[in-house]
Image 1 (cartoon, rainbow, N blue to C red):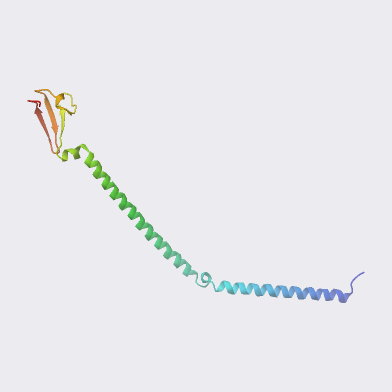
Image 2 (cartoon, rainbow, N blue to C red):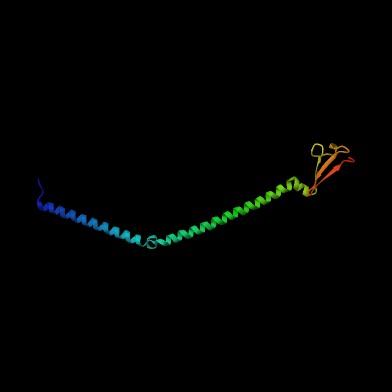
Amino acid sequence: MVPSMEAIQSILRDRQSQLSSSLSRRVLDARQRLESLKTRRPLRRPFDQLLDRSQQLDQLQSRSRRAVETLVERARQKLGATAMQLDSLSPLGVLGRGYSLTTRASDGQLVRDAGQLTVGETIHTRLAKGAAVSRIERID
């Protein structure tokens, strides 16, 4: 059985009405979304966001520069303290405090004990400033 012409036209009118109503709702939804987007700050004033990011970048750059300067200063202080420790332990530092280094002239061996020396032997004594050459006259 074939539907009548009026039935087909009625179905088409209903479908056209549904389609028109659906399209109207979609257009209304799209307009509302567009209005919502227009009120958002990045779309209203796009350069404000660039300005904000630029300020953040400046702040981060300043903070990183200060952090690097602090690290460098700490490293410099640590290096200074280590250099002072090394200087105090170095043979020249010891000489600066009034000690001396004495070696036998014959073989250059360091003299740590008077028993290593013989009367008449020549020795070299290094001081903080300069050196001296001596001859052993007596051993105590």
